[in-house]
Amino acid sequence: MSEVNMSVNLGGLVMKNPVTVASGTFAAGREYNDFFDVSMLGAVTTKGVSLNGWEGNDSPRIAETASGMLNSIGLQNPGVAVLREKDLGWLEGKDVPVIVNVSGHSRQEYVDVIEALEGDDRVDAYEVNISCPNVDEGGMTFGTHVPSVEAVVSSCRAATKRPLIVKLSPNVTDIAEIARAAADAGADALSLINTLLGMAIDARTRRPQLARVVGGLSGPAVKPVALRMVWQVHQAVSVPVLGMGGISTGIDAAEFMLAGATAVAVGTANFVNPRAAADVADGLRAYCIEQGISDVNDLIGALEC
Amino acid sequence: MADSKLIEERALVVSNEQVDKRLYFTVLESPQIAAALCPGQFVHMQIPGMPDKILRRPFSVYATDPGSGTLKILYQVVGSGTEVLSNVVAGAHSSLIGPVGNTWTPPAGARALLVGGGVGAAPLFMLAQQLSEAGSGLCVVLGAQTKDALVAYDDYCALPGVRVVAATDDGSFGHAGFCTQPAQEAMDSGEFDYVAACGPDPLIRIVAGMAADRSLPCQVSLERRMACGVGACLSCVVDTVHGKKRCCVDGPVFEASEVVWQ
Ligand SMILES: Cc1cc2nc3c(=O)[nH]c(=O)nc-3n(C[C@H](O)[C@H](O)[C@H](O)COP(=O)(O)OP(=O)(O)OC[C@H]3O[C@@H](n4cnc5c(N)ncnc54)[C@H](O)[C@@H]3O)c2cc1C
Ligand SMILES: Cc1cc2nc3c(=O)[nH]c(=O)nc-3n(C[C@H](O)[C@H](O)[C@H](O)COP(=O)(O)O)c2cc1C
Ligand code: FES
Image 1 (cartoon, rainbow over the protein chains, first blue to last red):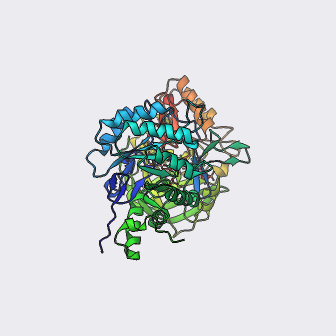
Image 2: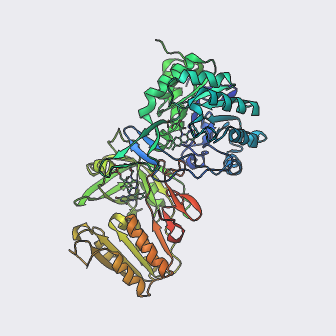
Image 3: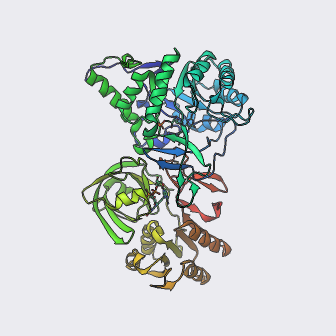
């Protein structure tokens, strides 16, 4: 087999291949250990973590929709201390970088989570999820208007020198504007897309399918939207992009890289095929060989319009 | 708790047989999962031929035959996935993840009362087989809407040393009415020191309440919508006195006393 360089650099995070998992779909990897070895991945991205833990939303928390699903898990997590003990403990010694996905209800909470992890050398990068409701500002999500994006990103930036990835919400009018705000405030990389707000209804009972009424859409159904946003963001900023949204094959991953992504994440596909993330990494390499590409970096933004 | 490894296996559909209007037994060849599976555990099944619905469906395993490497599922057609499944023919393939979840844990030597409503009869059958072999006394109460829907009745009756009581909503067979009444009578007889229940949520709740009133230890098998089926996504949580637990891997069997009913 011919050699392909699969290694990429995502804003200072060196990954042996461009494939990680989407936060919240893979826990910290232990649950998938019977299916493949996490060291096959370019990085593991952990479930969103807050300072002291959140209960999450009521059930039902998911609904299946055409080629996708809605979720309203509500960022249930046991808090950063438990993440360190259990998840980082499990990942320790595994040959894979760890991206910790950070949640907060206030600017200070994001900073507190990062500070709780700064001394922990099992963490390689942060992915700051700015789709959380901003309690200080009346519950509107941080990620949907420029001033709160700037504020939360610059606070996180001041708290760490590690690679800082900012995860954007697609539920905005102009993704490029939000991307620029995050990059200007010090993000080393941007990840997108988080889930698209949607809902599902049971016509017979006249009731919403989710206890929270609305939830986030993910899976193959969102891929065209995700590709479009990755492409727009790649054109708007100079920092690298971690692309996600409906990726389930190596070809999907290649499409995201052509649109401008430096790395990709596999989310909902893990639920369909528990080996999906490993299969995407293998499939991307196979695509490169088939296309006669010797360096996967050559794909980044190579879309010919 | 069964601490077996999870296996993803390509399974051959050996048969898929309609046994009542909306009820089917399907036999799948899945030798590794069939060999490892314990009573109460389930498989997370990809429905063949349904490209626009991507999630797997969880089904309890009704019985296994490690000799032939097969497992059997009893399912009811309730929606799009089970509708498609009912049209799958022998020779098709599906992907299974299993064995998922924990198992029933009756106390050693327990004289057990099993209560199964509808397809709730499915996750109890392997437990009944196990208890029948142990031979310490077992009564099974099965409920269904009609006589024809009591599709597991004969299998249960064939187990040595098992008393089977049937109830039908329309009175076409056995006790007329819900199976909660024969279940209550059995509990009041004082013959039992362990209760296991599965079926529609309201049934489970009533049985759990009756067991609690009589200080009988009771386990229930619960259903939640599941995405990953392996414990990673937190889609399937059950409210318990110890906080939220994952139905797929911390359950599906729970101590009834631990569940906080909605
Ligand atoms: C641990 C466990 C064991 C089960 N064992 C059996 C069994 O032995 N026999 C049987 O007939 N049924 C069983 N069920 C229920 C079965 O999974 C659902 O009836 C089935 O998923 C319905 O799919 P559908 O596409 O036909 O329905 P739809 O309503 O079209 O499904 C839409 C979505 O909701 C989910 N869903 C709908 N109803 C349920 C439900 N009751 N529980 C979980 N998810 C649901 C589906 O999986 C799918 O993702 C079990 C459920 C669980 C959680
Ligand atoms: C069940 C579930 C839980 C999720 N939890 C998180 C989370 O904790 N933090 C986060 O930033 N994104 C979370 N997401 C969003 C995903 O990481 C990802 O951005 C999105 O699902 C799109 O990718 P996909 O289509 O490949 O799933 C979650 C998604 C799902 C389906
Ligand atoms: S279905 Fe994902 S945690 Fe149970």
